[in-house]
Length: 299
Ligand code: GRG
Image (cartoon, rainbow, N blue to C red; front, side, top):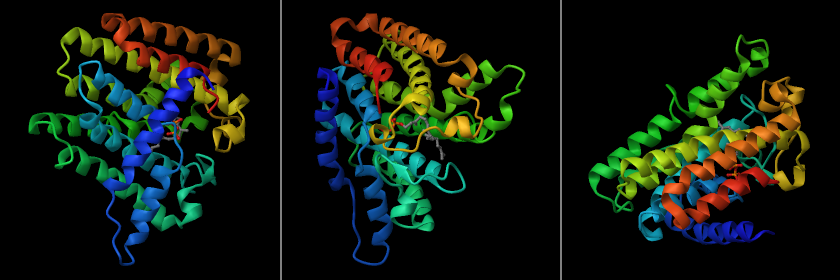
């Protein structure tokens, strides 16, 4: 395990320890949905988004204690998207984070509700008392997350387009289309992670733009590596079913450019992403290392 992989593991162990405190487990039958939410949230996961939130905020001296709730809100929202993406009506997957998907472990209706529960919990965390930032920052964070995750130009919009990518192989400009989809489907939450740090830390305009530029580049690189791993990754390491893009004849960065060029593009994006952070000097080492981790990840 590389030094950084070890650091991320340590971060995720700490992060996971605090998750049970965010839950209320009722005694009645409704308990099942909270259990399903907790099952999917606590079940593995690299915690890249929480790491990005907390390390971006740390650039401005925001304590981990303060930024944790925002990081947890984002991970709740991300986990909802994975639960719903795995449903039979979407990607129909049996395995996620190396464990049975939520609808396999529980049932389909419970999984739908668990996703709904995590989505709403994200906003309860951002707007409630556990988030100790001033009201205007809470409101801005909630608005940014809603937009990034939403149906007009965020993750839900990206997922809608992604459902059609089997039919998009003959699109007029497949390169534009795939970038557009991935910016919304995957990029928006990574963007929120970095932007949240800037908001919490009252970043100046140059710092704000530097973080947004970094987020945009790692977002595309992250999706390219996801497409590469779908072809040459290891199912055990990835903890999910692979090879589905080819089977579904999906438009991906790999189908568009081939493996070698896709790898080159990802490497260039990561290089550029790291350069975007120059304004922070050595303080941004964790974010620089995370960018390299995204490029070299095996899961
Ligand atoms: C269903 C509304 C809705 C949205 C689904 C995120 C998403 C949109 C679909 C997931 C499909 C997918 C594999 C997307 C590629 C990028 C991605 C989000 C991968 C999973 O993120 P990781 O690798 O996962 O950070 P962990 O488990 O480590 O948190």
